[in-house]
Image 1 (cartoon, helix red, strand yellow):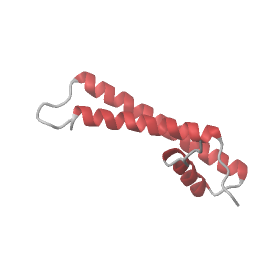
Image 2 (tube, rainbow, N blue to C red):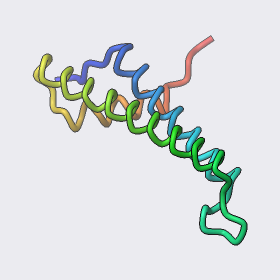
Image 3 (spheres, one colour):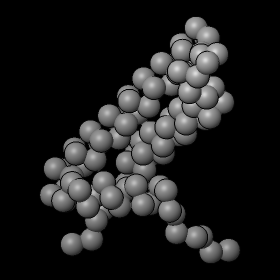
Image 4 (cartoon, one colour):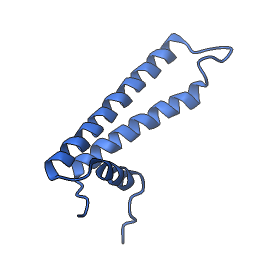
Amino acid sequence: MAIELNDDLLALQRAADEAHAQLKALSEEYGRPTQEVGWTEEQHAAWDEALEVWRQRGAEAQQAVTDHAAATSQDRGKLEAEVKKAVRHPEPTEG
């Protein structure tokens, strides 16, 4: 049986991936929090906020995959893999 995806699943995964990219960008910008200079309070607050957003978006995406897999009798692991593949490695469009 072919894996069935929908736009909501893809949008939630994109949001989770974007939140992770923001967290990674802060890491690259700020450096290690244990470095000699350390992070400012503002940097810690920005990091904590970005981490929470990533956790929330990831949890939303995971729950949507779980719910969709159950509703459509699909293998959850295969569905999750296809969602991530579709978002992270989209097929080239013609035109």
